[in-house]
Image (cartoon, rainbow, N blue to C red; front, side, top):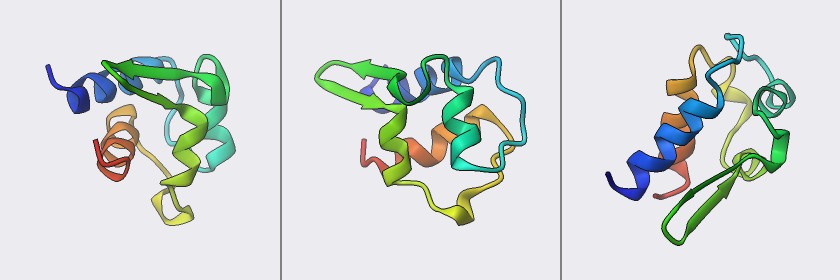
Amino acid sequence: MGVKEEIHAQIVGALAGAKFPIGTPESLLSAFPDGAETTCKSGDVELKAGDAGQVLTADDFPFKSAEEVADVIVERAGL
């Protein structure tokens, strides 16, 4: 599994208990187990949930699933 796939899987796993749709950045951060400090790691790559705010826009919301959140974050993070 590559870095992109591993980070994607970790984001999906971290949001496993979240209730969707998620309509705001604040709601998304609070859905992660450790909030903004939730960290996904693969090799030398480390991505914190709080960093997602730098790649998400208001137009991305609402998110309908954990997979959708992971797709957007991984794509925009350039992994």
